Image 1 (cartoon, rainbow, N blue to C red):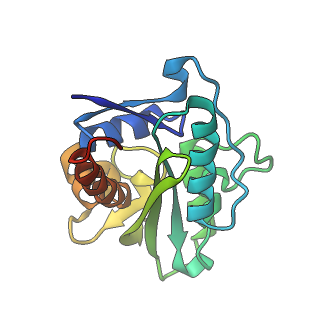
Image 2 (cartoon, helix red, strand yellow):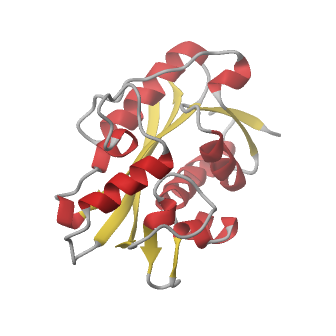
Length: 203
């Protein structure tokens, strides 16, 4: 039987990505239930932001919620953009740059950097009710490419190069990305929890 999980996001690309992994569940954006959802990320960690989003959406829907906070951490930039990945390079945080503009800005910051090691981070929170919360945090290791490559994915995917695949994340198939990505790893950890809970009478 299909169960509904509300995603604390307005990103349809993220919804499609997560739906492939949570195939036995009906993943819905708040807007698909006629709910306006907006959350100002002011936490000091991926966990704080993900948990904050989960709590905020749960108060609106009173049903199980899945939330995540993801970001790119570049070693030579001191871990930036990190939790500010979605707002990186924007003069006004309320008006973030487009993916293309943000990627161009990152490349401008990396012009003089020879060491291009980076990682994607994803913290995912599953909130089933007021007192039951589960978390998982995972990473994907890679490098920042010199130029964007590929058209799949979203965000920094065209710039995130994976040496073991000799391509960027934006050049992976959907199945490959689900297997190796930070979000895919965190989602599968949450899925194991859901499968265990599915053996119980209630969530």
